[in-house]
Length: 113
Image 1: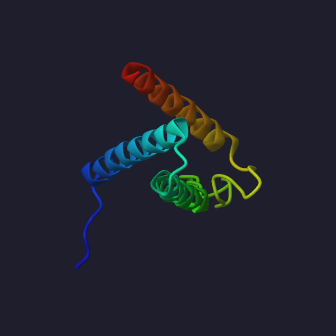
Image 2 (image 1 turned 120 degrees about the horizontal axis):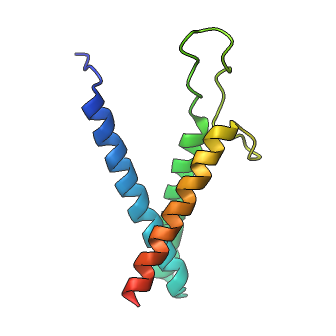
């Protein structure tokens, strides 16, 4: 049975992704900040780091959006290549999102201390 993709489904998935990424990045930042050397702390850092790395790899493997006209557009390619090269607009958006996420985490951490 084939399910149609709806705008609401896409928005829900985006919201879940954003929430999950924000929480994971926040937890990872906290484990780095508290810097405990016990095995549990190290394992937490490792689990979170692997999850973030996997998410990044999946994002980098996504093709760029093809041109709506079908001609003269950019060919499909990853958003970011293995050495950081890629679509400048996509890279700018990722950088902007990263900065906003970092500021959000810093504000949360400042409020907890």
